[in-house]
Length: 188
Image (tube, rainbow, N blue to C red; front, side, top):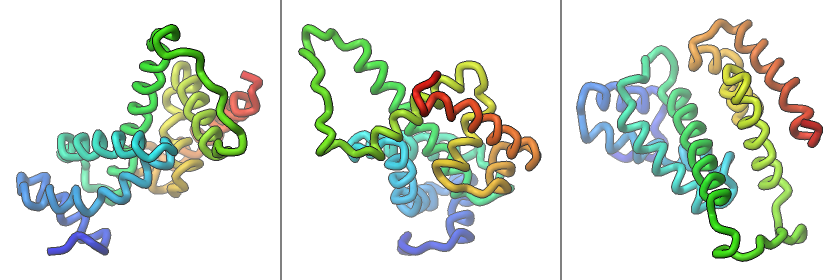
């Protein structure tokens, strides 16, 4: 069986078999979703080696937590959330390592050259910093906001994934946007 071009139903079927302990199904499932997981991680971490690290962590989390997929929605929707969370965890770990590094050992940090630095990459990092700030006081807004505004998931998919009513999810996204705007403008 090839994992290229599997339909959503076939991926869900592999996930159910993997939940039941079928190791072959789990391996096929992980191979099938890896490109999607990497794309999700690249949406958060623009540097490919960082995204690949996050992707590997996400695949390990998917394999270890597959039993928590409830089967109510698509497996790929659940997988998407696991991948986003893994990418954010990788970002936090990298940021904390950079903060903890001894500046005398590392030397002075170079300013990025604007001619070679992606504006999109900077925006992603600004967004991650904003999400970290919002999460400290309002964690309920972060996941729905990222799933909607960064990954373009529908409100219905998000509601199903987070287990909240549709109206609650829309309100969380609305309030999350209100909190994020000043942070992204540098006002917060």
